[in-house]
Image (cartoon, rainbow, N blue to C red):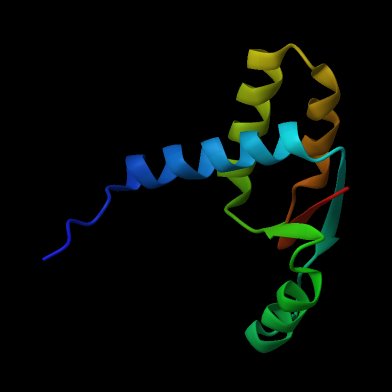
Length: 95
């Protein structure tokens, strides 16, 4: 039987994934995702596959990860993303 990851481990994985995307992709698009169905979201992800990455997550976790990444890298421009991370949104990373 597989061992489930704890919440802390899941948060660490999410944080490292977000930091990797912030480093890898030069452009980020924040998109409101209110009233978007799961089927529609899957179709969007399929259409963007290969060109970009769609990342969704909890607002507080994303804000925390962005703050920590900005402090770790010294790149304060990432802090301008924090006011945009409200309600239901999705981050789209692309070249």
